Image 1: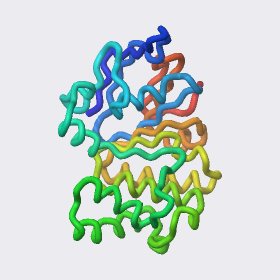
Image 2 (image 1 turned 30 degrees about the horizontal axis):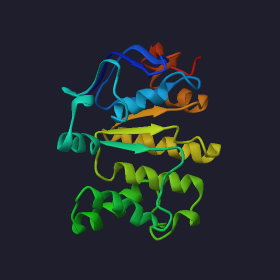
Image 3 (image 1 turned 90 degrees about the vertical axis):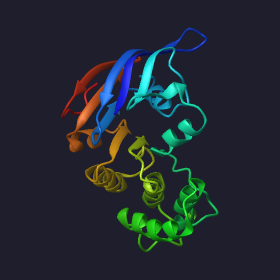
Length: 226
């Protein structure tokens, strides 16, 4: 599904942030990517989101080289990828319902679809009673649930969760991880970057450990180890 083939990323100042990285993420996997700050996790995600191009090697989605996609092909690819950020990135003057609906509107979905799908997805993330709440009326954990609902509303094939619990307390962290597991159980591929040892150990899923721009460990059912 996702293929990194001998990928190196070097910036104009000569700094290599990724070096000869090869990995495959299969459809339906839940993969945690761990490593200290500067290990290369963020660059890996940027390449996958087509925000950066590799200096060497290729990043592919199915049979498509991501860095060569243009126009409608790039738009179609990005609609297949949902992203959850650490800082939520909700629109402050829109309700939970409107934040999620906005993602559907941007994708050109019809009003009937929006009215049917948004309540269903907000219910999936346990926000059935908070449809009309604005972000400032929600807790951090609830805001992140809205962000997850927004990320999955257009039925992407992949969810990238970039440090999604970095601003949350342990209880909300646990809840968010359970939601991500639920989404994965429904068939969506989930790629999670995190510094949280407890999350990784409790998931018991595949763990990729990065250090100095290289993959130093790839365990099918690993634990947090650096």
